[in-house]
Length: 288
Ligand code: GLU
Image (cartoon, rainbow, N blue to C red):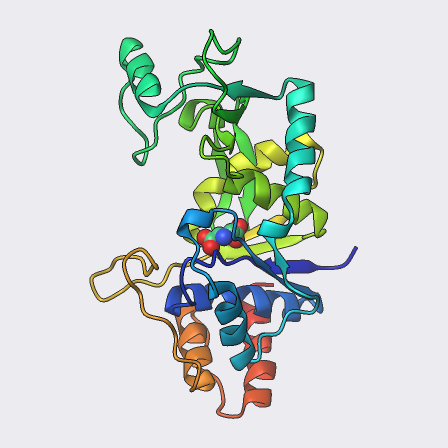
């Protein structure tokens, strides 16, 4: 199978300068490899998604000439696929139901003298690994095993993490009845035969969990490239949460040039057709 890449925005807000950089990077990499570029709207986290935003993102991309080679897929249409993967993991004993609330987890960790949260997330203490202890099932977790997970990033170089100690048994199906990002992304990347993932560096930290899940499901691990984050004037990451404004695609060349510069590429020529050819060539030299 030839190169297949994707841009996978969550429709929690329109594209801003930071997400535009991720979109352009994934598009450039696909074009530089003579590959296929897909867009997947990651709308599983429904409470965070805004109605109409997936369509708005697709329109912003189209305004900039970034049109997917196959019809976009929407994660909200794909529950049966996620359910199948979850059922397999549960049947194998690779995943298990968990009845813990956040305060149950905090209490169990304190009892083990391990209360320090990692990035504000609690490392799951494993309470329900051997059964629910009379509690009602709330979520489903993947059973992790000690040992370093290794993966290579085209920009960050060799990476490793012991997922069991760094994050613990992580959520696949949430207590609020929603699919977890980790499960949906791994199932979709496999189902869509994604060979290369190009995305923002803020997601690099998720990769070891995704590799563990890929191995458990017998999926192929794609090749990863995590691009530098775009920061605002305070040095903070641009994000929808911090109110980054939508890119104004009425001037698509300005948007594309700014995204190229953020990726360390030349701003490129004025004419769109020339711009695409020369920017793909520049990308190919930067990220062979
Ligand atoms: N949907 C995720 C986000 O917008 C990106 C997922 C991915 O590229 O793996 O943050």
